Length: 292
Image 1 (cartoon, rainbow, N blue to C red):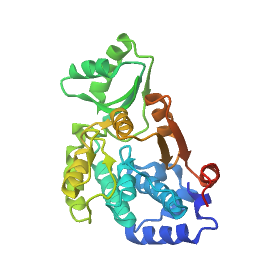
Image 2 (cartoon, one colour; image 1 turned 60 degrees about the vertical axis):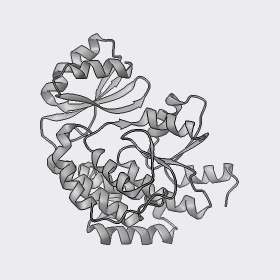
Image 3 (cartoon, one colour; image 1 turned 180 degrees about the vertical axis):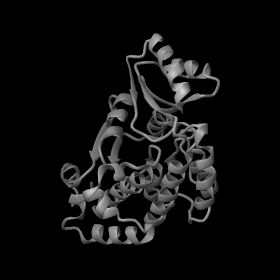
């Protein structure tokens, strides 16, 4: 992870050194050597993913590419805050380190998340509503692709009902808890205390937030939304639709893998979408954009 970003780029190397000092964690070892199970632990995975995204973002900005508007998916909202110039990169990493640790500590062992494929959002909501609060919709990722979150008992109870309603597939996600659900209430409380101490400015670019798929730029509103994000759903479908309403016609996913690129194409089939996840994909994008 991020290995090619650090080869031949003194700026990225210096950023990594600063990040390791700020977080007091061996990011380089985790990203380069693992072990995989340690890297995938929530408290480590979130800072590693954010570092990767911010290193790519830094190089894009250096090449003259800056966003007109911003959105992020879950932890990606912190990278969004950096792109919107409301949060400094090292402060973003510190926030995500605190967030991941709080989520890991608070996650009930008998809980999890399941991707539900092939059902309208309303049907998934109706089935979850019958769980007595044990299961909620956590992610509205794209039409026909939602994620539910809750207790093990609740997930086991609603799964056959979702299948009976016509779900094409139910995919258990490899996560350690019921994220974006009320089961993260304690994590939200712990994170809020740490988040309050991290400097946050009013955003200089419009950012559409997961909580309500609306633009917020006031720092006090943003601070509240980022805490509420832990217990509320990621409204990604609605967020991309809102960006389109704002006049966005080109979408650039910045970060490891290309999951969001695929989701945006499902939400807006005619959109122009680029994925920048490493040096080759960045080089190809910059060449196509005639930059640098």
